[in-house]
Length: 254
Length: 246
Image 1 (cartoon, helix red, strand yellow):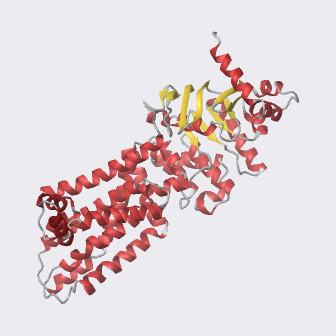
Image 2 (cartoon, rainbow over the protein chains, first blue to last red):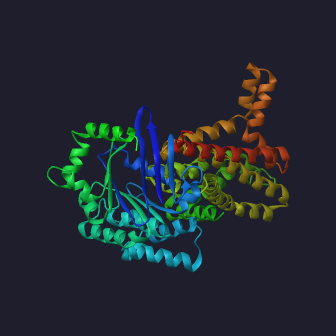
Image 3 (tube, each protein chain N blue to C red):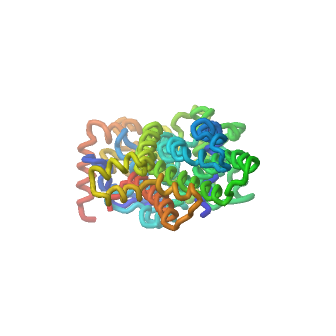
């Protein structure tokens, strides 16, 4: 469903993503973890067709995100970092706009929009301009637009950032509810989120994957048997060694 | 087409959901007749036509069209919604065309606000209504050309003020290139062919024949090419943000 093969992306002299490869299938909720600037958002942007890789292939449901961009984009829902939305629009109008772009019309459009707004728990805020809503409601409005067309693949960049604990629980419950029928990729800095909803955790640093395992597997690598410990070990002082280990693993013949 | 229609609807609604369209329409409905009355002497020429309105319209459009188009891409970049738009299954040409058509709709609506002047001159005399209709058609094409160029410059920055200044500068060059003052200065320094070429590129020269009620294929091709060039440039500038390495 999601396939990243040897993705490389430079910004000027900086190699933001450096030969990154992974696949995810239906039913998986994959967390992309890593420090700021590790290449998580850039990877997501390449998968969604917002950015073209310098080399490598990003594909969604078998469609190349560059060569068959619109087919790939039709199969995915994307919540960009910061959950941007048009401030003068209401969440209802914003969700309907997303659906119209994807060819929905009439009663099907109205039903899909209302279901998405309900799932995102927008309540009465669905009829107020997005620019007047709190950060949490803005994020949920963008989430409603991302899930409205019931895509096979969801790519969510920090979906619970800025939400209060109750709202976080709501979004996590929604992700768990959708998970069996979709492939979901989320980036997050919240390690408890990984344990709560993810079936797999990929740790990136310096644009490379340094760990790709289950949350339990990741915890078991840490001396203190915690996700935070594993994250620090992989992305902190010992990150360079981890990158070297990952590189040597890739070179080893299988 | 579905995506184009969706973006067009959103863009048009965005103009009217914010004060932009209302301020623009109010400013235009006051400024255009004021120019015709006070500068052009509409009721003092003794002629039943709208020449005083169309004489000054290019200068008004030169400033107001960039104000209408400055948000096209700059606002998308500023708010981050460009990333959302680039991730949606919309062809870039459809997004650019939809944005242009929405702005053009508002511009044509603004031109429509000057129709009371047309009615007034019909009450006062017997104007050549076909010539006036042609002049309105020319004004719509001129507005479209300015909007397309302004949209392209809006794609160069995330700051709407910078987009406005750049677009006004570009429209000024397009307009002033046809002024006798500029053409005489060029003719004095360079061979006549350069002045002729400059006049040929000027939106003012092209609008001039339409203003007088004359439709020529060359003028139509010029304005449609100007619109197509502006939109193609906007598309190319937005597409570079994808940063393709192949």
